[in-house]
Each structure stands twice: as structure tokens, then as C-alpha cells.
Image 1 (cartoon, rainbow, N blue to C red):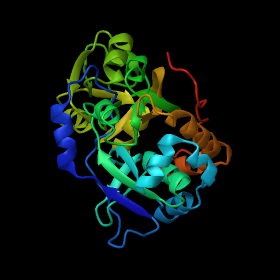
Image 2: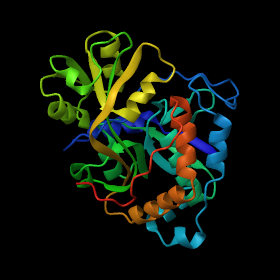
Image 3: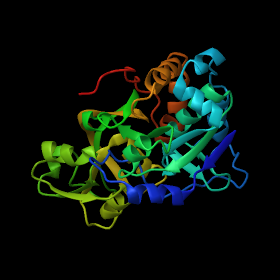
Length: 322
């Protein structure tokens, strides 16, 4: 398996040159707390990931027929390059966490990107570039990456700039508080409190709609929003539940309270606009769902690590988000 990390300098240059029309929903940016062994092949890490089971899923992924790849311009270009260039995250415990001992990203998003690369190339080969809420659309529009898999919420505004395959996952909002906070147990308890979320994310509008009497503390990324709760500058942190689960894995100072609320946030696979990639990727994604790979990957990367025994139903591939 080949997994490379792209040069940060090239991405910085792109980010500085770009002018954004609309920021994207937040990718997870939690500080790494990885405990993988020096070999990188231990059965489990401190974050609870069964690395051997994960690798088996990725290595057994389906491979497309040559004719299928050759009939698609986008996939053919990826095969010619010999690597799938992925815009993603490096520090998301459940979705895409880079193991510093071997440079490999593992998690639900990372696993899907590796499975997609295997489908196109015949073997796993990805190049990961760290993206932020301020760079994702630009990197796709500039063809700096082939795809973005980074808990990337589909909205009509974003779909006007880039193409989306999927959705491949959906999540509602949830509430994270300090472990010793007994005053907030539901969304109704957010009235009169300071609630952190990520600026330019769907969390801002969710708080304004479902907790209009709360004061919104909009911060640049997940790390700063989480720190605001831990430091007492915010009473709660509201964002997608699946992202908050990253914060509670191996942590005893924060907790998730209440039931999920608000509209479902559907995650899509970002693709270059005006390409023929969407149909190709949707066909692959449907196959991954139908053959059980999606559920197996979810259980290893999310379910087993958060104590959830039953995988959620995957969203309908190709569903229009309005």
C-alpha cells in the first residue's frame, strides 16, 4: 500500500492565492492523540482502532475492470498518475488520523479513499493533502486534488462550485460539554449559554435555529472549539455528532449529552466540477455499500471505538440535497 502526504508548501500557496465565495462545512481538526506502536501494525492503538482488521478491509476492496476505468476520463487520469490525490484531514481520530510512525492515514474517510484508489489502480495508492474549511472548493476547482473526503457536507451553495458523489454518510448535530457539566442535558438547556461551533460550518445555523437564545462563539476549527469547552470559555460545543465522537474517544474530560437534533448533514465526496467523475464514483460507492464493505469499515473505524454495535443505514447514493 502506498500512502503519501503531499507537500504543505504547495497547499499554502493555493490557499493564499484563493478568494472564497463560500466556506465549506468543517472537516475535523482534532489534535492527534495516536498511540500506535512503533511498528504501526499492532492489533489496536490507544484510540481503539484494530489496525489489522482495518487493513484487511482495505486490501480486499474491489478492483474495477480495465474497460470501466478506461471509459472514464477522470479515473483514467488517476490511473495514469499512479496515485489518487486526496484532500482530507490528518488529525481526525475516527475519520482520518495519520499515524506518525508510518505516515498512513486510517479512519472511515481515509479507508474509503484507499478503497477508491484500489478500485481504480488495482492497489492502494493515495496521496493525502490536508484541507481546511477555507481551501476545499479551491483545491478542486484548481485541480490540485482528485477528490476530497473530509466529512464534507453537501449544500446547494457548495454544489454550485464543485461536484459531489454520494452522499456516503449522514449525521445530525449533537452537544458536547465538560464531563462535570450537569446543567446541560438537551438542546433546550442551551438557552442563555455560550455555545462554540466552527465558523462557516452548518453548526452556526443549527444553533441559531434550535437554540436562538444561546450566544454563538464561532471559532476557526474543531481544536479551538473543543479547547473553549475545556477551558470554560464556552458552555457547550455543537457540531455533527460523528465529529464530536472524535473528541470523546480516549478522553475523560468531555462528554456528549442529549439526543441528536436538527437536519441530517449529508457528507459527500468532493470532485472536480465539470468532470465525469460523479457517476464513476457513485457506481463504486454503491458497490461498497451493497457488498458490505461500507458497514465493515464503519464498524471497525467508528462503531467498535465508540461502543455502538449496530451500524447506521447508509444514505441513498445519488440523493439530491436541497
